Length: 392
Picture 1 (tube, one colour):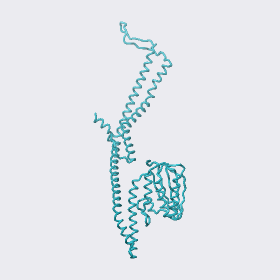
Picture 2 (cartoon, rainbow, N blue to C red):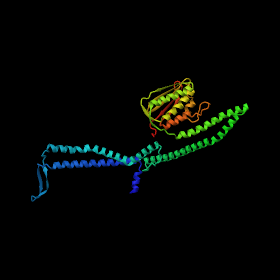
Picture 3 (spheres, rainbow, N blue to C red):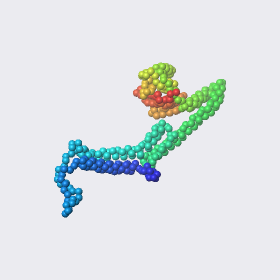
């Protein structure tokens, strides 16, 4: 019995559907025939309740004895009552009416059985697997109920899940290894840099002009290396930072952002303006994340702006939307593609090109995003902070 069940379970969907429909058609034919026979029997019972008024004739032998049951000769019958006549009419019409009804019910039943037996469980399993994969949850196994088309699809899903799990594990291992290497590299550089810095200070105190000039140049490069080591440690901590979201009043936050933006732009010799378009009293945010992103965006805009930097606060999709614009030359094509990459800078200078990367990381951790583009008069950066980040 079990091999038969297994073969039926593994039957391809197309053949299984043909079997279900065939059985449904045969069942509909049987039900129609049974209905016709029952209706005919009902008509005969009603007719039998009325006695026959015709004269009955019998065959006799030479002795005058009756042979057989006899037969009626004539056409006179007792008419049916109106109620019985309506019943007979209904019984005679019922087979014609029930034929399409039985056919539809049997086909519908076959479709429901086909869905329940062949489609329901595999589709539910695949839907659940899709939801888990979309949530980056790969710690499960896709159940395979048969070897039909859906079973093959479930097997493909399981293969994909296993491959994703292996790839994610490898990526996670590489990320952790990179963090450890960066931490070790930054730690190991601090000691020789400290030694070099000490010797450099001694050289700068030398009485020879050429030695002091050379030492000053070396000091600038040593300071740059120290800053580089510091940024490596900062990036390692940044990847592990998560927002501490709390209900935050928007008016004090906007005032604080305006004050810090004004200060940065004044030091750079640029003008600053801010427009607050928010309408809510408060949003669930991490104010430190927002302030750090705005600080980086303002500093970056003030570096390239000709005269003014503008900041706009608004609400979108239940979160906070920041738009930073300047009247500078805008982003170069390469910068538009790589601006948010770590250590990318479109110019030679003392900074390491981490500002937009830090903004991107903080926005992502805050269930948001960062977009850079060229506006009508210069560069434009838009940052969004969602409210679905973890609330602590």
